[in-house]
Amino acid sequence: MSTRAASPAALFWAEFAESKVALGGLFVFALAVVLALTAPWITPQNPYDQALLSLMDARLPPGSLGSGGYTHWLGTDAQGRDVLSAIFWGLRTSLFVGAAAGVVALCIGTTVGLAAAFFGGRVELALMRLVDLQLSFPAILLALVLVAILGQGLFQVVAALVAAQYAYFARTVHGAALAERRKEYIEAASGIPLRPARVVLRHLLPNCLPPLIVVATVQVANAIAIEATLSFLGVGMPVTEPSLGTLIANGFQFMLSGRYWISVYPGIALLIVIVAINLVGDQLRDVLNPRLKK
Amino acid sequence: MIPFLLQRLAGAVVVIFAMSLIVFGGVFAIGNPIDVLINPAADQITRAETIARYGLDRPFWEQYGYFLGSLIRGDFGTSFVFNQPALGLILSKLPATLELALAAMLIAIVLGIPLGAYAGLKPESAASRTIMAASVLGFSLPTFWVGLMLILVFSVELGWLPSGGRGETVLVGGIEWSFLTADGLAHLLLPAFNLALFKLSLIIRLTRAGMRETWPADFVKFARAKGLSMRRVVLVHAMRNILIPIVTVLGLEFGSVVAFAVVTETIFSWPGMGKLVIDSILTLDRPVMVTYLMLVVTMFVIINLLVDLAYAALDPRVRLGGQR
Image 1 (cartoon, rainbow over the protein chains, first blue to last red):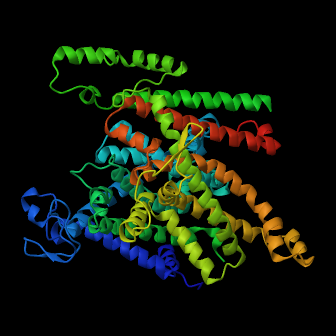
Image 2 (tube, rainbow over the protein chains, first blue to last red):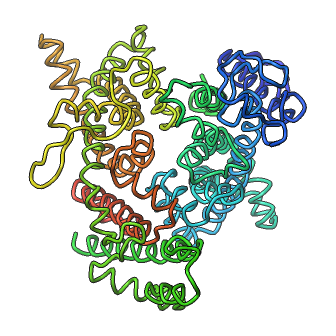
């Protein structure tokens, strides 16, 4: 590593970019986000506008020319919907659910973890007991229970994911904050004395960020996967607001008759997004973990 | 030991009680099951009668109290859809789920330990890199997606294995088993492998890490210097030390295999508890949902309790440590 003065961000980026695989993952993820955001303008068809669908086009294999006058590169589903367009729209829902669940769980989990580490004593014991208890159940099971209780819909799914995932953030932050809390700079900041809120937010929190960023990346991928699983099981996103998981579920019944494309292409899209995020997360873990530094 | 045991037991009871409140409260809050129970064309009197028969007109606390009371008597209510006791209904599906879960664990162990050991012994070889890359995929691919691909490849394209159901079963000890017939075994293979994949990746990683940690240790070097065969050093000397954490993790993970079976059973139409509970969620069959959730929670609490107790028995620091 060179000794020239560089901003921490530039150093971080240089280290991150050392792995070409991770850069590829980042690129693919960025592309998926762009495609999702611009879906209404770049797809040949709004797949949820009933007026645009024609049953004449139902279950066309990939590459066929539909009645709309354009080629269905990935085929059409049972309602004559262009699978490629449906994937881009589904990507919107999947990424939105993943990001929303990740961000809210991050905020709640960080608050719980920091509060536990800062207050200590009974508060810590109660909060972390709850977190540990929750972590002993698989997230998918908790999410399943919660959607069973809350019902279907975007808000319900996000709420279920947040409730199932905040514990991972809480434990990560708690662990990092416990280690940092005893260090001298925290004592110094408290001794000046700064207000506790300032010590926690401006001094303690920034130093807990590295592991938190890694967990956040992985949890966004997990949220997308769990949401897809719930939707596949028919208890996640409603048919009116389909995610990639809903698309896969819709095509499942046609797969046994050989019409693989309705399920498989949304599945591949889901897979690419999840693997891309995980690749980025792996590299972030290597870059941000001081123990792995030479 | 006794105070520790009592403390943990009390904790477990509190957790189960709290979960019963959450589960019942939550299930209480969802849609009106009456719409599922009776013909929409039924008149108001029939409606009111049905509501009264199921006690659905009572306030929440009264229903909860009644529910708790029946729970203690071992009565979990009657399924709205099947009109059978919910507990009996779920328990009748239990063997299918257990068979699937055990087969999955078996696959994970039989494949995972040798693959992991190999990857640990020869970390630089191409085969080891392939194994590790595959294990990363095993972690990150959603279970349902892998299940779909298995069906697509092995059932639809190649036509080697059936895509769903249990196949031919044999009655042994009053319970139907699939693994005793060739047809049943063929039906079991794909779902079991699907369910095993996540645990397989986990075992590969654990075994590899254990092997890499154990191999440079003095006792292994000594065994090798003594001129023992490679086979004996790996299987007897190294493996014994690696197996301890693996056994612990497997014990802990058994619960999550049963939980994940929900997904696999749905894909492969395996008639187990998981498929039943998804169906009951979709049809708002409250008693079945509540019973399943209570059973699963109890199972997890018992597994955690056993692990805690095993640690306490093995490590005195845990039981003397008090707080945690």
